[in-house]
Image 1: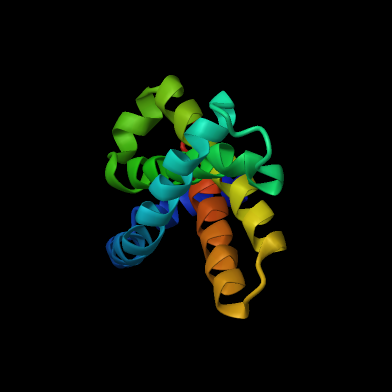
Image 2: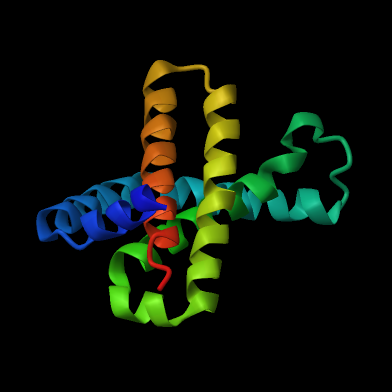
Length: 141
């Protein structure tokens, strides 16, 4: 449990938090439009609105949903004060589950990636998601 507490303490260091927020802005500029597009394209597929022959694209909705969940909960973890998170088990649980969903989707996308730059982007986002998730667990009283 020591590593979880250390990660939570590292999140309180101002240069680390500023770096994560700056990096998050760059990632959001790239990943939010892509995730929203994937989510919107996946809605007819999940509802099967005459789209029964999409084959490998049937999981677009879940990929978009997981990506958006991961991005939103990462921002929640970076922007919500430590004291607020420590006092709210529900908020910590939501952040943990959203980050977990985003990490799983990141692993799936990294495994499917055909290009090295995209693989590296997914790998970095997985690493950051893991760090944010571990630091969230470390906030337990």
